[in-house]
Length: 451
Image 1 (cartoon, rainbow, N blue to C red):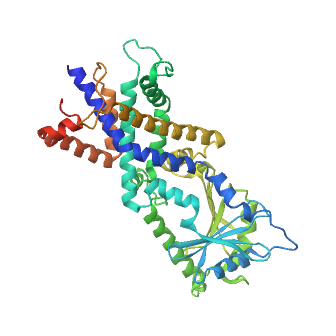
Image 2 (spheres, helix red, strand yellow; image 1 turned 180 degrees about the vertical axis):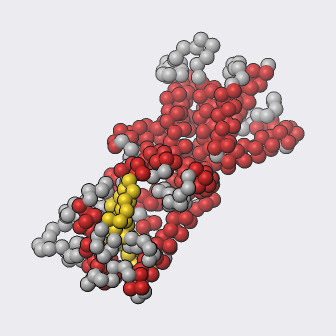
Image 3 (spheres, rainbow, N blue to C red; image 1 turned 90 degrees about the horizontal axis):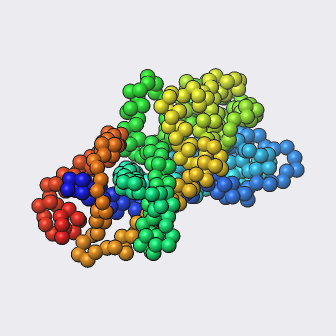
């Protein structure tokens, strides 16, 4: 009886974790699957601004940056993006406070080919939809909770469906296709879960550094793990990104505006504050860094022009500091020189985004999100076909099972790893024990009491 009660408990937790997670799994899988192909999608979007024809020499980088700033009155240079090919439009990001605009410049005629707000670009919208539901910190908190409970759903699913007591591989490793609709949907759900659960858990864990609450927790751990104040190389949420953009804007205006001479920066160039670009751009192009490569102005009197590789495959990233007057390289940091925790997260983020090892990584990510969608849809079908009257319909137990300290240990470890999940777990357990077990009607409806 004790083993049966445990089995019923695991079933209930699996069912209710799935009930909460299924809408978010469908949403995050769809948006995440789209984001896997960000390089191809952005190349398609930028195709009208490639294959440009020239009849003479190109305009200087400083002139191109000046044209971009003129196209957005009151703006200042934030980033000059090096073109991958000579026949492409130059992309220059200018800003006013926290608002940034990407301007596409014809590099010879200085004609404005297009301009779009950075946060209005398709893949930026997909990124915010995926990570924050376009709801800022509140959306990030919901996504983090859903992701944490999705891990519980996957772990309990593996625990329930794993073959035991001499059971064969049919219905677990491969589906039984001739046993009717009920067995088909059950096998489809179980087999998909067995094959993709570990990949899905990896995908979820590598996405947590972007979560607002867990990201702050990680930031605190990161600060204790090493004595450095280096800026992290991944997004800390839309609010933090906006603060970073505003800080860059203030620094750029100070160093490139009317007070630039006091910092002794870049004012010796004939093209004014932007003249350093004419020296830095060709030198940056000669370095052969992994694209996209962005050049940012100094943000303070003791800082340099930054030449940064923002390659999607993060282990290829490099950040270089250049003197604006001489073009001399003053500092260089390759990925291998970053702190250990940053390298671990960087590799995980690259794998999460499908960029770590090319199209194979994209294919594995796509199979994983399609598997999650199949898991969610098959769960809905099974519930709909078996739902009882007068109850929500947690599945009835289908056998006996021994206690598993491994499952308990993994849940406890996750509660410590993701404190927000730990708090929510404690609240759910307290709610179940203190309230629902005393309210017979809701308890029966939720499967906490026998009907």
